[in-house]
Length: 114
Length: 112
Image 1 (cartoon, rainbow over the protein chains, first blue to last red):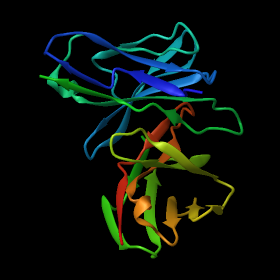
Image 2 (image 1 turned 135 degrees about the horizontal axis):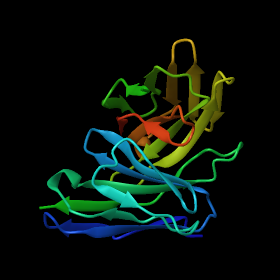
Image 3 (image 1 turned 90 degrees about the vertical axis):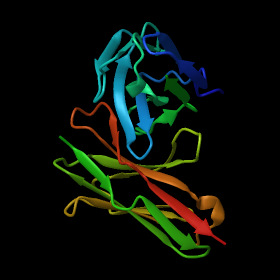
């Protein structure tokens, strides 16, 4: 049982480049999330999805896009990378039923934009 | 908007003592509050969830309290060990009921 899998683990981008951070879960969870974590700043919600075909913005969505074509996958797209997007990105999933609201996190992607 | 604060950025204690971490929130009355542990270079891991109608919850050496009047949760680790050294995050559900909002975390260091 892999849980939540994120790839890549590390990436360096040049300003203006684009990339997709991959996230997949094998627990059949409806809810999926993307957070970014900056040093000393806690986790900030970028986008979330309540099921396949449904996505919505979180607290800090600017500069990012997401899609959710299947229950398993929730990729995060950076179109024009900027230094402000240097951060650690975490994907998470949750069943969010009445008895289980906890989040399961991936191991993160450390992104540097130079 | 909701605001969640963890009072201490860092807490240093000696092995065997009880660590107490504080989480305060404003502008909202969440149905539950969660605590997570995060080790360096890793994603957060769920520890405990406490609901608004529960005053206290325990799991092995961990204890969480939830005071909805004070809008505060306390997280206790009894008989602390160096292996408990990590960052602890509190989180509560946003008003839309769709995502968790996280505090900045408290980094606990337990020395032997």
